[in-house]
Image (tube, rainbow, N blue to C red; front, side, top):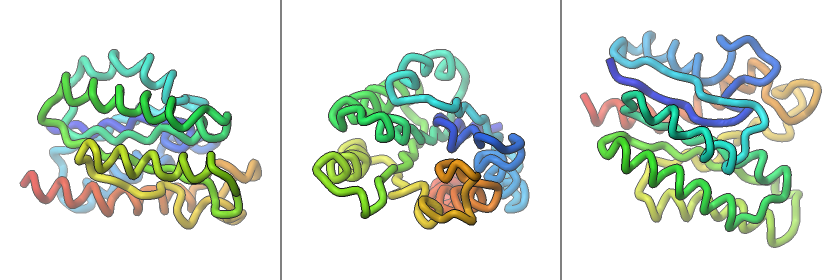
Length: 187
């Protein structure tokens, strides 16, 4: 059995929805549907998690076998205005720890962005940090996990921030697009 660990925040946890509607659960369904029965998905998403709190809780997850590590943190850093450099350093430390403990694990980095309507240097730095990390670490990259969902009222819960069940399906599609390529390489 191969393990895919989704390490993220409320987007990964499926905030406000039953666990079965969170995108990692949808990925598990897709794996079964496609005949990849030897993969199991673990959802290690915690609502409110920042890259700093993710780094703090990472070690307990690294004790178990991991074949694919999906890193989907950073949204809360952006919402809280945490300096982009700090977010980048925390994500780098998470990647380094995963590579050290599981050198054969494939890593997928899910990018975050602010909508284009958010002006200023911070939004630009934040958008850029994920791309730079992906390139520097040679990891598979989902450019913007919330592409097509952010700001779309009909795809989010009433809070306007967290994807609803339909929005989670789009997050699953974005992730599956890159995940499937990794799985096919490993056949």
